[in-house]
Image: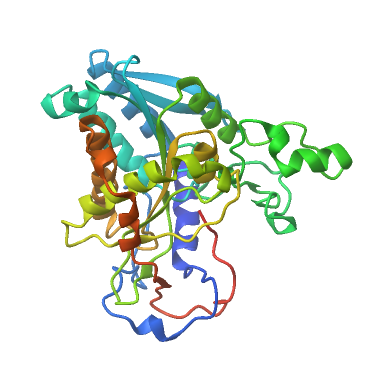
Length: 376
């Protein structure tokens, strides 16, 4: 009870703050429609999102009811000792595909969507079997359970250095590590290791210090999925035409992942087309860099199609149902398209249709509007 109250308290503080903006703020704050927004007197809570105990209970109930279609595997432990679960759905002899959610603890929509997808597939009905007759579906449900319980972006590690010291030490000092910077199959490829070799006192990292990243990469290497899609949450944005962005996406941009860029773009096109039929959905391009430890790049470098999906955030609980549905539709669309082969017929060049214009949207312009916004 105290933990949930702590999460509630933290969420009120966080969600009461206006999201940070990357660059000068303009008159875009007047764009309409906006929101739905957290009202001044609104009680904000996290009851719509599963606690860790609720998550585990839901997964185990689904596994039990699935008559063997769903198997849970613990792929790692967090610093607080919580188990990280991989839901394995279907026949291991089929083509493996992989989804991960909630690397950042305060980005929960993907996890709630994944739970719905797992339940839908666990029924073994005709729609589910169209997918499972072809695919072995692997879903890491909530990569960052410690961060989710603490309602913070990072994992929990009080020994973490300050993130401002380097792009590759992307942490909050004394809080934890940003999990989505440390997906390395070979730790010696990470600059932290090179720095350790020259200055082990300042950089005491002979091994990857982020257990969650290690868990996901190890599971990926064990099962070798043909693609990995990574679901996150972002701030609230509008397009240049004033439409609310409900999700943004991007493929690998590291040059070592060039071989899978077309497959990654095809995944984007399938999700883009699926959402185009809904009035509530606006999908655009996410601006991301080439850092190799970011999952979007890391799993592309390892030879899998790889996509980042960022679901709209900053809206309290008012639009949770719509946004969960949005992510469910995207997950199911790529599963169905991969199973029936239509994924490979998609024209990867059509990602050019994705709107690249996006502006942070605020009910009020924040005083500290020139600070950097956390990215993927």
